[in-house]
Amino acid sequence: MTTSPALDAKLAEDGPAISGLKPGMDPISDAAAGQWTLIWRKFLGQKVALFCGGIILALYLIGAFAEFLAPGLPDTSRAQYTYAPPQSIGLFTPDGQFQLHVKGYTIAIDKAALRRTFVVDENVIVPVGLFVEGPAYKFWGLFESNRHLIGPLDPSQTMYLLGADRLGRDLLSRLIYGTRISMSIGLIGVCMSLFLGVVLGSISGYFGGWVDTVIQRVIEVVSAMPTIPLWLGLAAAIPLTWSPINVYFVITIIVSLLGWTGLAREVRGRFFSLRNEDFVTAAKLDGSSERRVIFRHILPSLTSHILAVVTLAVPSMIIAETSLSFLGVGLKAPVVSWGVLLQDAQNIRSISTAPWLLIWPSLAVVIAVLSFNFFGDGLRDAADPYET
Image 1 (spheres, rainbow, N blue to C red):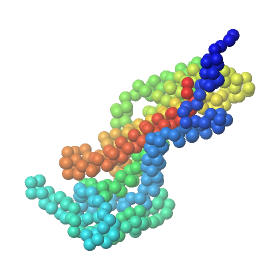
Image 2: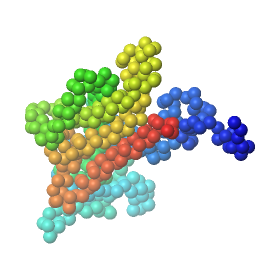
Image 3: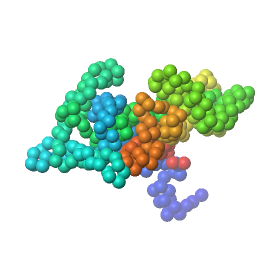
Image 4: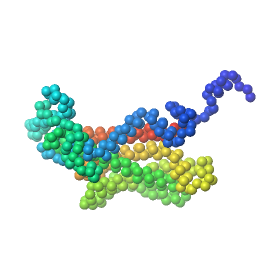
């Protein structure tokens, strides 16, 4: 069969009709690259996902080094500074000298509401420094120290960069300590849900038969449980004598046991469609065990889907903990989390008097959730480097 010269030239230019790599990938160097190398190279091109990944890393670092980063302790209260407004950091004093400082407060009486209010006094200077001495703490519960990243040079003076709550406690310090609880409960909960969902979904989809029937009936029973009444009942069943740490782990387990069913069914469906593929049959004929076929051959092909589900599940866990704690069902004082901080903004007087009690914890939740969502989108695209 003969072809025209124009058609021959076009075929020579375009090459064979195969599925090419996504734009931005080198077909020569990437041809011999492994799966994780391709994922990493593609992910480096996701600018928004990289930025959000940096935010997530920063949040976890804030939680890990909360004692050092917080200007004070989360439970230190000063009743004379109830609902004190936020202070801003200045660089130069009124006489022109360079000095980190915040302005002090002047007490004013609101004659209409008949209550005391605080007004930032431009004439009162509170010097602020870096790596200053402050309230003593135990870093990670192991090392005693009194160094803080930022704080007043005189520990007896006050600094409320984000304002104070109804007991005169520093909101910035409480927000930093709350980051550790709220971010870790999402991570721990997702790890437990990921393990249950992937393992049970893989077994159900690979073996089928009575194994699949039993696992699916368990999933249906768990999914049919009403969430809010169940949480209320479990919260009422938790003994009042339990320590806040024990309550924290119980809430984590509860959230995890209710969040694995969706992933398990999604993994099961993918296994049904892949277990009869040629590469699975070849692995069986090569003598691979069933465990190796499941976890070495089939599961890696679900990487993009699992990554997307996991990164979307973490913000769901954070929102669940925040909602439960806000309603008084989850974590409670003296534990500090974003949801516990939002409990102080449950009445109109608090919002009208101190709107920062609602703004900053809510903003932290929004930033964390959006960062995980955009980060998950980038990981999902990077985990599927070939166009279909």
